[in-house]
Length: 235
Image (cartoon, rainbow, N blue to C red; front, side, top):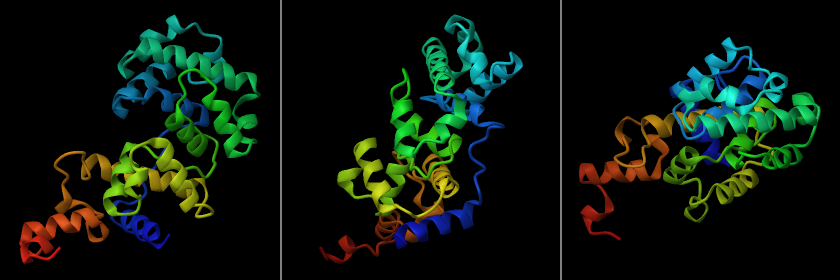
């Protein structure tokens, strides 16, 4: 899709590489994917530091833990009792199937299905793990991506409402577009735009790096400057 190419190139030029995922190992990335659910990344980072100090950033170490041991360590990530149980369940499952290398050897769809069968792993978390930890070209169609791509005019309105519909449409539209690094960078760039400019309410369109090719942003600017179609009586 030329529109995607243009958006990716524009954001990469304006924002630079985002350096995702900020983890030293694939196992640490997997842990981070669970801890960052419904919480700001800096809070998840504090929990990761606690786990590192305790020598618990390895899945084999987490697999033999009791969730009650982990809960105090991941308190900063919120929902800490639930997340502790999720970490133990995921660590035990991945360890049982042969570890990260065995999971990475599977086709993306099979690896994703394995992860979705684990307690606490939803579609967004599974896709993040498959893309960033297992190195598969998978699109993470989170709320940031759906909002930005919808407003820019790439993702049709009918596909914006749910994760599943957006993911299906994007995976088909971007089939063969790039490797895991490309998909990971694209997602990271969309998150940056969604966090800082393309907000759910009161988006900062004037300052947004995607303004030049954003349908909604350009329309807002036209109307603000008095040059929009409604100001001229056109339909």
